[in-house]
Length: 121
Image: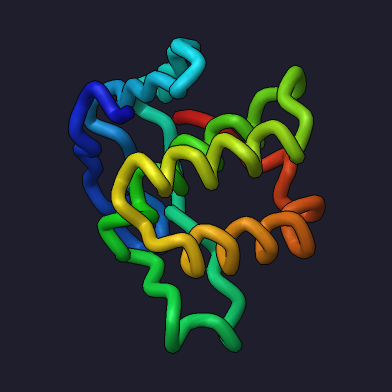
């Protein structure tokens, strides 16, 4: 469950957004994850072939994608753990089962090349 709203501002000249306030999510198991203010994200990197069914600005994806980007930036997180959290966070946001599965499979297939993205300003 997201405990704070996603507040971002576009970074001029890029496809990135910067968090204006921390984003906090609590898992079903009770763990808290905090994406810090100042973190830069591009939401989800949706492959072109899937963009007709998955929108990068989809409300059931944006917050979860920011959390996922942040977890990918942390060396202590294994990709699979971050990908599972993405799927759980999308469920919390009301994403239908099929959409969670499409996004999850996409990051499992293509996420390895993005594991070391820059994290903040």
